[in-house]
Amino acid sequence: MTNKTASLDVARSAEGYTAGGSAQSSSVADIAPPMTTKERVRAAMQVASGNMLEMYDFMVFGYYAAAIGRAFFPSGDAYAELMMSFATFGAGFLMRPLGAVVLGAYVDRIGRRKGLILTLSLMSIGTMCLALTPTYAQIGLLAPLIVLCGRLMQGFSAGVELGSTSVYLAEIATPATKGFVVSFQSASQQVAVAAAAALGVFLSTVIPPESMGAWGWRVPLLLGCMIVPVLFFLRRNLRETEAFAATHSPPAIREVLATIAREWRVVGVGVLMVLMTTTSFYVITAYTPSFGASVLHLSSRDSLVVTLCVGLANFAMLPAFGALSDRIGRRRLLIVATVTAILTAWPAMTWLTAGPSFGRLLTVELWLALIYSAYNGAAVAFLTEIVPPRIRTTGFSLAYSAATCIGGFTPTICTLLIHQTGDRAMPGAWLSVAAVCGLIAAIRAKPYQDEGVRD
Image 1 (cartoon, rainbow, N blue to C red):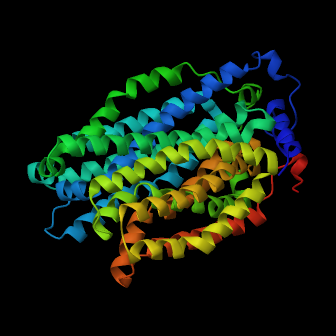
Image 2: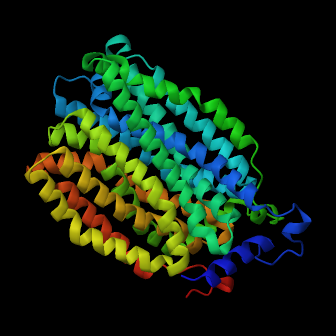
């Protein structure tokens, strides 16, 4: 991957194309003045702030999965309640491919800015469903049904939220800084991870455990609902990207879907690439509190502190590795990260489970966070570069969402594998499998080039 490839991509996007693929004569300058560096930075922060809400809500659900299970899926069996809770957590991911296709095609037609406002609206509804729904003891079967519907709506919107955010950042970046700028999509998620974990640590000190399990888990969700108006204000003030604004004839939805079908190999490679991203992310974030408390029998506070440290470390490392991918190339970084994961994930997890402690959990999670940051810092930008510009939001979102249908079930899969095998190191094995998929994708992926030529 070189800057020359990225330049071709940006140039091709900025020209604008008719439905038949012919270039428009007008330029970006005819429509709006190019963004200044200050405007790009401000726009990146505005976009990333909304993306943060989605991940914040996902993290809170993952952190308090056991309490949510008792509230909405009571059975008297702690394992069954946890599995039902994680299954509901994962159900939202099954809606992502549908959201990617339906909303992605719509966003490729109406514009990046309007799409970001639409997805934020749908996400906020899903958040309020979980925060405000009475428990099973209060309204019976209706409670889990409402929670499930809320999760499905969140999944539907999330199917294109990451794609819209990543594509927007890619299209406002310069060719030489694309990896760095796009990395703020993932970095914003780490702010959510750290914020949710820090809030969890604070709440665990001021609310007794029995109250925390009964109602305290709703507090972080209610706080998330309170910041929704601020996020709407930030996104309403976004400018449309220069690349999309210069496209005088956005593709019709039928054209988007036809191109997706024609480019199925690209989408398939993207799925393999993102599988490593989603699996490693959920291993080191959403699953850590449950793994630390339920499997390693450490305190919930210790597990949340580790998750907080992971979020802060990822926030610092992701932009650094994104910038590194701009200098040395995306593919090289992807290969190094996946090979390292294949060789070390299982041994590291085995070492941790042989003598569980706060220090060992912190060490292993930070090591896996380093691998995740190195991989993701290159992968997200690379995915925006292998998808044809005219269907970039849909193609990116579909690949990401399909992979998340598997990787998003990581907490459920790990819980099941440990229960079936009795081996507490199974999360390391699952991560290694995902890393093999990522390695295959890194070798086979080719950036999209002008006139359909791929290098």
